[in-house]
Length: 300
Length: 231
Image (cartoon, rainbow over all chains, first blue to last red):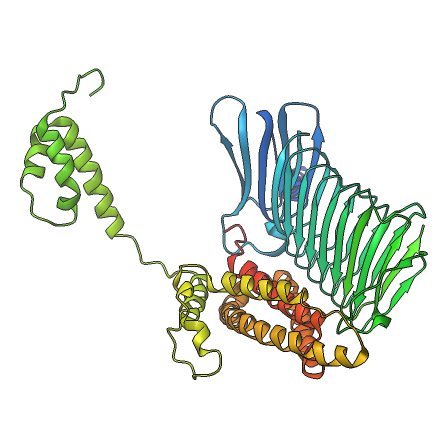
């Protein structure tokens, strides 16, 4: 009798314990999947100099150039209600155009759950167009004819790009490193940072962000930097040869480079806030404008 | 159907010519009659009829606020709204304004052109006295030209702002915050430039930054209205 009672007791305690183990073991892979998200990987054969576009709402996008005639994409999403579509044109054979886009399938999905991260390896001659509303974008080592990168709040970093580069962010910072082609960079509240560009034409504007330019001005180059209230700092080598047109309405102008001052017709701005001069032989043209920010020009 | 040779007849040609009118509810008894006789034309007829039926069942979609703002800006530029006659009333009656170009883009081009040409009108100073006399004339020209160009741009921006106020509640909080910060920054620069111009009407840098701020504001608002958060 006592034995039977002991057996019954063992059974009644073992059953919920086993059920609990079973349930946990079923839940664990689901939790891992939820933590890891849904990851997809794809390789697409492409023609020389393809055009790749990415349209994303939230998440990080990283694009790197490589020497294969393929586009390799790895995409991770946090929510199963977020879908990544790809469109390849033409449908058969090496693609001339590849388009990736993120779709939020459920309107209740919001915030971080909308995240889709992309990592792309593309041929170096790729033309690129990226729109990432609230995510950061990083582009490295491309030699295509043109690239357009736009975000609303995400930071943008582009390094070693040789074609026409158009970069715009409403509120994100923009870092362009060793850009070699024509450059246009615009932000409203973000900072602009240029590191050793070798471009012959650069246009950059920010309203309240700062501008930091580090590098030389190639012969024949045309550089225009403008901000409204942020400070601007130009750090160039003593060997930089450029013609300078710098003006600010309410800000200060601080120059450490020896300049030959040019005669300038009278303007409505007082001369204390402007500097028109030539450093060495003036082979490049540098236009700096700020309404109320301080412009600093100094030697590296 | 596959492998069946098709012999196009004169009735098929007539069917194609009259089909469009028939689908727009004009009387044409030859169209349904030929569709009953010709297998190939029957397929075309049935497909188009089905498409028309399905299209009529689609819900009417309200155009986006950007469309209304642009239409309003265009109508305003064409003088569709009654405005007080003033020194600039003749400006809006010029024939070239009737071309179908977006009003905001047009006034941007006009203001930019005025600024570029006016910037080259700096006088060569001979004496301090003549300098004081000669700077006032191009200053007045620049101010008037800019006022004309900025007026239309300002109106277009106001239209976009109204559309943005309707749309902003649907934006994600962090996206909305980014847009609000940028618009506040631009509004601050517009106020400061206007203050500068009241004290110094000839301040070309303030003119330039004021125009740029309005243009950037229009771009930011358009961006916010067109944003598609993947839905």
